[in-house]
Picture (tube, rainbow, N blue to C red):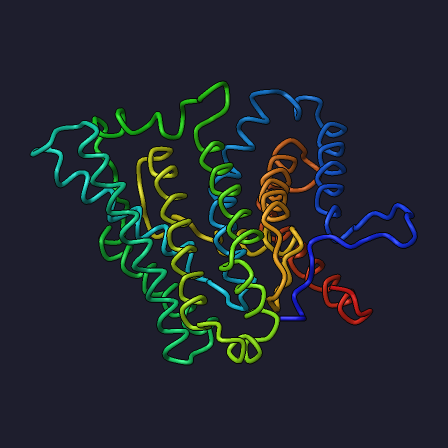
Length: 337
């Protein structure tokens, strides 16, 4: 457990020093915002900011779950496919019970409940196969990524599953309405982030995640139930995917094989940008939140300028991941966390 890295470092002899590993993502966010304003003054418009925060909520919620998985030394590549599968099952169920229960809260609640159950189940499968099967997380989640994507394609018969319009009218406020002037998806994102921060930094479970990611063998010798903790991180990832899907479905009211494509890339990018170490043992929830907002901001800026095509958004995100991991490795070679 001695390898666990503290969140903050003390200054030498009272001198003030800035921990760029902690504050770097926030500085980068400010710089990116300034760039957006220079490109288009409308960037800081209330409507545009609300739109960016709402869109960042999907990836941000999933990325919070990914922070726990990666901090404990794992990886989940199935989140985008999992979201597509869950969305498809939600739509089928809500359309199926529409005649019996009508287009009301009961029908929507059945879809929401199914989403949570599927999220927990999918996360548990990833976790238990990885830990008990002693198979690399990369292989397991790569496999389930293909399975979930194939299942939603089968359910949609190669096409698109569409939610009944009457149900969608009842469900759409979950995405489009606001509370105290803040979009509901942003409130959900904030709740997940605060809960994740408390769990990771102020609970025994969070300390176990740090310890396992730092050195799994030492954690075992310290009487930590490594398999149980790692499985729980995947279950938490599944719940976060479920929550993101719940607020995503009313946005388009449909699901297909194209739903959630590259969400795993964006979630991992948000986590790495935020300062969580890819090799495990160190994680920052608020850094992840900033990373998710930054990725959405990049896409928004590309939409506001003709200098770079918006179709290159994935290219930009891929470069960011490579650069972020390279900088992390460089810091480790210098003996820094």
